[in-house]
Length: 243
Image 1 (tube, helix red, strand yellow):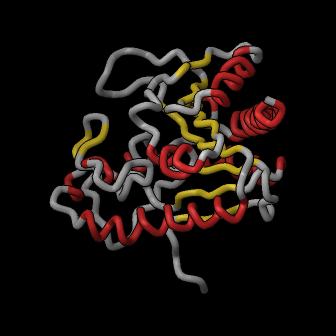
Image 2 (cartoon, rainbow, N blue to C red):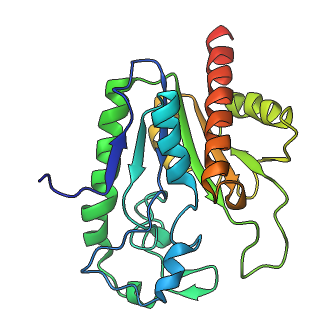
């Protein structure tokens, strides 16, 4: 049996110059030797996992041939979508919940065990694949417990300096009759760690897509969005190629 890793790669052997998917928050797994000090039910909430993302990614890999690199550890253990020196890389609180077990945690040990292997494998994979477009897939909650406002967007595109793919996708999602967020509910100029590192730093195009979790909480929703994202990503890739 192979040794457990903080990531798994699914789907067909990636063709060079194709479309691939990355999901930093696809799992709520907590290793047996780590005690977070939270109610177990919270592991099924958005603070622990991007709800629905794993199902969408699996369907995109199986039905649309989009290979994926998926996290296999909860963001509460180590947030793979943060820079190593970000204080929230091992969070001590999230959306009003104290993560007591992370107070005084061995951050360097967590980085060595989870963060660095995940990103080293992702870097190696992307070099081998040389994708034309990376889909960075996340989901967001309709409303944070710590804030009262509702989030109206059904899907959002985040970006930092490379906004061309996002601009195309915003229009295409809008043509589906969706309410689309432009760098909402977060700004990709502030929260874009994985794509800054693996896409923008290497001149690779990407779509950082945030789907509101109630859209993909069911298998039917996951299937619908897998089809839609695969189709729109394909269109964006062609547009970039012809630009």
